[in-house]
Amino acid sequence: MEIINALITLSAIVAAILAWVAKIRWAKEYAAAKDETIKAKEAQMEVLKERIIGLQDLTPPKVREYFLSMREQLVV
Image (cartoon, rainbow, N blue to C red):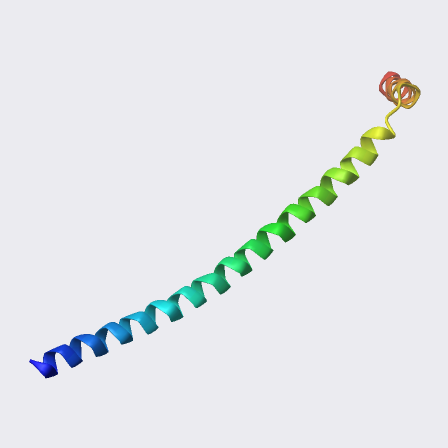
């Protein structure tokens, strides 16, 4: 009976160690995935900032000028 108790205790210790190692590996993978998500969001924000700057340059006089130049090109 003592051997069975010792084997059960030993297997419980091994299972606990394996669970701990799995938890550490999962935490590292989660941190890496989170960092990649943050980098992707930052890149997306940069693209949106550039688009905002481009749209801020489209003032009504510039849009009118563009329209008139396109109309002239199409008539010719």
